[in-house]
Length: 295
Image (tube, rainbow, N blue to C red):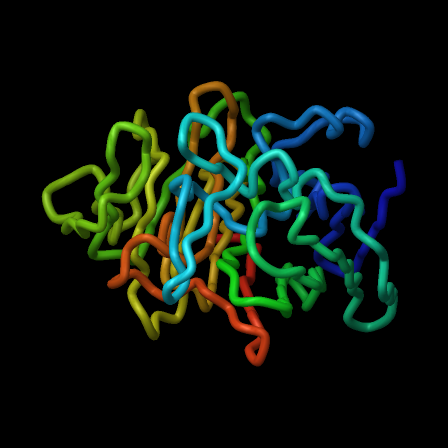
């Protein structure tokens, strides 16, 4: 399986065209993402490690409407997760542009057909990974032939020390609210305050025994949105995104934590959530930065 390697003075990232996957991300001798040793192992990737998620990231109920048109899509247990069986994590992306100069980058492209996804419209999407000093930038652009829900994210799990767990990690999330979830982890539409709960991470504190599979509502106009630190390696990662939500996921089965910058899960069914319907005359764009440094 083909691997794309981008390097500069500070970072090295290994990208797979299969799934648009971040296989490795190296900073000062430490691979800060959890992954598999061999690229071929990603053909079985139930945890979506490192993958580009689309056409709709997160959970989406089995039906939704656009204006007066009702749509149902391919789903399991009445929910479609991360684009379902034809999600972009399983797609073979085309290498559109590859540059190894001052600002190394790769641009991958994919066409998601209506007949495969179960959603209206064909979507053409580009995924750009670029290295800017100590920053990995991920940029998405998409166009559609019909109005359709689009919500894209990356699903890397981060571990800044390489240790078997996150016991030496501290986490800060600049957020005052979190989405309420039902028993299927589907947002109900209620937005709760984080005050006096384990969701309040406005001050950096140890990850500890906290387990999340939750969507935080990010505050606007912050210099950063998230800060993760490992005390053993003194590596710090700041995240900056233009998205309103951040799904944080750290399952007990894996020794990493996932930060899925995106719009809200199930937004097409909840009118007061940020809009995720993209129309043919519009372009979907998203930009998220992962900034690595020492503290």
